[in-house]
Structures are given as C-alpha cells and as structure tokens.
Amino acid sequence: MSEDGDLGGLRQRIDALDDELLRLLSQRARCAQQVAEVKQRAGDDAFYRPEREAQVLRRLAAANPGPLPEAAVTGIFREIMSACLALERPLTVAYLGPPGTFSQDATQKHFGQAVNCLPQATIEQVFREVDAGAADYGVVPIENSTEGAVTHTLDMFLHSPLKVCGEVELAVHQQLLSGATDMAGIGVVYSHAQSLAQCRRWLAGHLPGVRTEAVSSNAEAARRAAGEAGAAAIAGESAGRLYALPRLAANIEDEPGNTTRFLVIGRQDTRPSGRDKTSLLLSTGNRPGALAALLEPLRRHGLSMTRIESRPARTGRWQYVFFIDIEGHLHDAPVQQALGELREVTTLCKVLGSYPRVAGDSA
Image: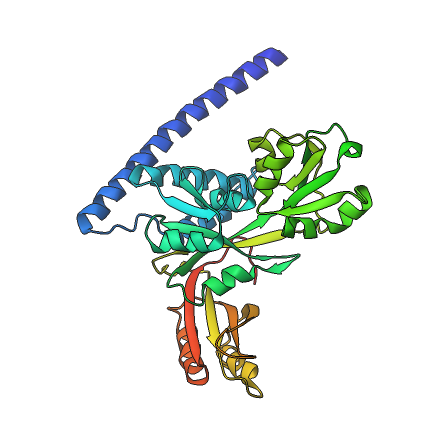
C-alpha cells in the first residue's frame, strides 16, 4: 500500500474513533444530567464534590496505559467533568484577579474551563464573595516555593468561617513581555512584587540598571506595558495572550522549580477522598515548650506534618498562631485523637478544613 493509502486508512480510523468518543461523551453528559435530577429530588444541592472528582482523576491516572502522559489524561478528564458539571449547574469561582493572572490559571486548572470566573481586586474580597454566597468557591494563593507564605491569606483565616476544600499547585513560569523589538529598547519593567523578586537575578544579569516598578498584579503589568512604549512586563503566558504582548524571553524565573500553591475555599466541609490533608490553626500561651506541646500529639498519633507557619496573633505582644498542615482527614481516628489532645493544650484549635491532596503530592 502506498504512503497516501496508509495515511488515508489511519485517518479513517481516527475519524471513527472520534465519532465513538463523541458518542460516549454524550452518554456521560446525559448521566450527569440524571445525577442532577436524583440530587434535586433528594434535596441535595451539593452538585460539586471535590473528593469524588479527586477519586475519579486518581483512578484514571493509575489506569492510564499511555502513550498520553498522566498530566494530559487528568487534564482531559477534568475538562470533561467540568463541562458535565456545568450541565447540572455552572459553578461560580472567585479568584484574585484581574483576568490573566496566575490565580486565574490555577482556578481553571482545578475547576476546568466551564466555570464562571469572578475576578476580585483583593484576597479579602475573594473571601467575602464566597462567604456571602455570590461565589460557590474561591481560589487564593497561600505560598510560593521561592518567596514563602502569602501572609494576607493566612491572616484571613483567623476570623473567616470558610473552609479549605482543595488545593492547587501551579508551576509558575515568568515571561518577559513587551512590544519592544529587543531588550535594548526596554526602559521600565512592571510586575507584581513577588514576580519581581522571583526574577531578581535574571533582571540583574539581563537588564542591569533598568527601572522596575511593582504593580497590583501581573495582568496589570501587562496592561500597562501594552500601552506604553519602551515598557515590559513580567507575567504569565495568559496575560501575554490577553494583551497581545509578544514574548521577548521565556521562563526567566530564578528557580526552575518555582511553584505557587493555592487553596480552594468554600462554605461546606469536604468528605474523605482516601488521600487527604487537614489544615489547622493553633495558638497557645507564650511559655517554654509551648510549640513542642503542639507537635507532640501529632507525633504520638503518627501524623506527618507537611507544613508549619507562624503569624502574630494580634491579641497581645509576642503572641502567635500556627498554621499547620497534616496528612489525613478530620474523620480519620488518628486525626480526631490528636485534635482531642490539642484542644487540651491550646488556647485556639480551629480546623480550617480537610481536602484531597494534589496529584503527585508524596508528603
């Protein structure tokens, strides 16, 4: 058979497979609609179940025979689930905007494209929109692998009733975007303060002496650079597409593994998924051995602590609260036992939420 004949046969096979995929997708969508009808009859308005989605994606990733990589498979099925959920009821998700930020990228990575994205000017406004019911969920940054904790997000949990019900890890690749034809024509670089810090060495080596200016977001930086001759922005690819800014240099972050972790916040608790994490907010008196007393119940019940962060309690001088992430779900017996002991040695013991751990989290 000729080469054209081989290609023709393969293309016919692909067309047939596409037709079968479409038929199966339509069947899945109709099943999703039936699920919605069953929930409505039962008075259950919780259409989105984070633990169920996590279980589905983990199962499919484990069953993946290749040649598609795991990330591609989970990405495809997340979009399928997102589109099917939108047939039941589209979710509204608030995030730290404006459009074109890494927070929007994280929102769409976690929820897919078929959600109503609601950009907010501040982290506080994201919390407020979810608490008021204007948004089903919110997505807020919590820490960066290079620059550390996002303290404003931590502080919001001190008084917010909202729950942590998910997490997203986003590889952050910073791009130098500009309408200038080359770097010699750049006189100012705009970006968010954290992004400027993440690219400090690159800027010193490639644009020495060029003025940098911190703005409210990377998307705002791209907007400014798009309208100003000789200006550049450090931002993500989505901001470059949004403002039609060419990329002069790619992946200019100083640390190649630069990653930002985001939390998904909502009003409901999340059920166990089988591979979970629990976030706690703890405080105790300022006395010798106080921190050790907080950690001892975790050790005694075999709970791995994956993160600890301290913040001023704002209730007195040199008083602190500790934000701690541990393995396990609130419903797990070891977690319940440790919490019982923690309540005896703390002045504040608040469970911020239990939620599925991100794929690839080996902690």
